[in-house]
Amino acid sequence: MVISFFTIEGYSQIDTTNSKVWISFKNSAHNIGFCVYHIQQEACEDHSEVKDELLKISDPESEVYYYQLDTKWAKNRLISLAKNNASKPENYFILFDVDQGSFAKLYDSTKTSNSYKMFSVFDLRDNFEIKTHRKSNSSIIFKIVSDRASSILTNTMWREFFSHRLGCLSSEIEISLIGSTSLKDYQSFKDKFMNFVEK
Image 1: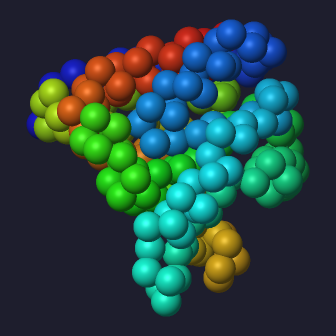
Image 2 (image 1 turned 135 degrees about the horizontal axis):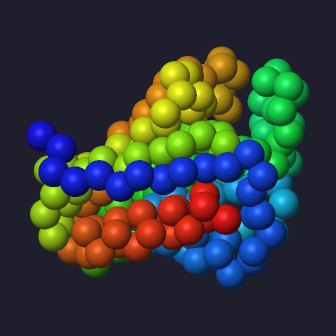
């Protein structure tokens, strides 16, 4: 049962050059285990050591699968998507899971983690709703919903980087968060998401 929702309106002409808004949005995404990429913003390098940290605590004989948000890949992904839709790459941004199950291994329960293990590409010209349900202080499930059908591109890391198959298009994504500060971190992300899209 949906117990709350927030409406977010996008515009075709969006000022994404406001670095303070972008940095706040990026940091709030980091707090729930994601990173973000927009072609007009400085690329983030905050997660470059995650795989090395995982390797340190893993069995030497086991494989460690961790996918980094590579700037070249992200830029090409948005350019390609824009070209296929007769649009501009600056109309899109990527929400990329940088947790991928690593936070539970590397941090304690005060670090909010997610179970998404995918990335999604949003069209900033859409109108959005964020719907929440199953909400508590230590866990939350929320959806980001577009007003246009098949406008959010989503793919798993494995399909994208190993099998090289295209992702699927939908009108919504669902994200689960867990951790002692997950509700607070979600609320911050929601606010910063709204601020970024409305600029």
